[in-house]
Length: 114
Length: 112
Image 1 (cartoon, rainbow over the protein chains, first blue to last red):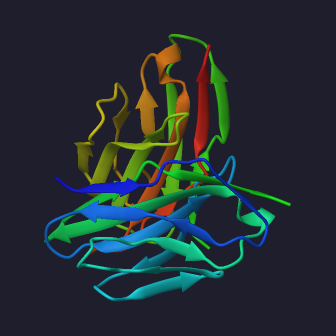
Image 2: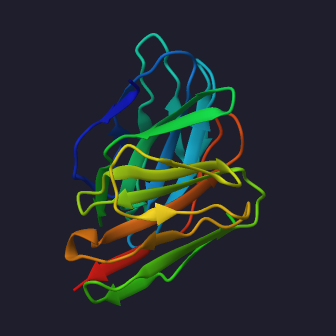
């Protein structure tokens, strides 16, 4: 079945450091890939997405590129801020016909210290 | 901004009580989902619906039940709450195809 594996946290970085959160997936067909962010006490918000191989999703300084050859979708940001402290979820969505399945990774907690 | 709402945000209730968690969306999405999120953050799909009068159980077995009488409304009910039901419950919806899901803010349930 489908699966998403992301690096375990927590990840602690100093402000302005470079961020990478690794995500790899296993799925048949051509899934869409997503990164969601969850701030404390909130639901998940879509951060960025990519729908086909070599697509790059970007938002708020975060980027991720859909790499089909390595089945990866690593999240990167060049300079993190304290306000980026949150839990980040990698996810894939795959469907055919009326059926759609969304699979989430286990989440990576990021803490950015001043 | 996503138009999906969950009420209540927080609920503390005694063992044995019946509760209903509300979820409504105004985006006209056919697909709706309920996830249970444990303290370790992992999300577990417990119910989903592909449209009115369609409900299915998810990957994680749950004693809760759901109904989908209207497109915009997807309530979750626990007939008899237990402390093991203490968790955060997240509702989501999506359009057809491999599109993103939109999440509500969640209901944090505590059963004492």
